[in-house]
View (cartoon, rainbow, N blue to C red):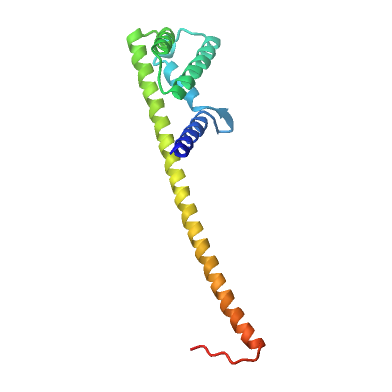
Length: 168
């Protein structure tokens, strides 16, 4: 049971890593950067209050908080409030609207993580079944080969000893 839990834990860890890092269009990017952009996205670009340098810093902070929250499976209330304050400040919206936006994006992150873990488990199950079938057929092939080899060794031995062989 412990081995299965470690496998699941390793699979989940690997999945989180694969969620966080991959290449898209030849550039290093990360899915949580996308979610950070979604949180910071402004419906009305003229309403954006943060300059670009501050936006990049906020985006980096958001990504760090989202990674930590995703790994711990919980968005701590203080992080939720902090993210909401950044979103409210950037988008010129109320804290309640910003908290709703943060909650919605965090639920999307959680769903993406759960979907990735489920896909990884299904892939591991499929690989296990394939390995089982391969091993079974390899054993059958080796057994059949051993039987045929012994049969023809018997025929060869009798031929060598000049005895007649009857196949009936």
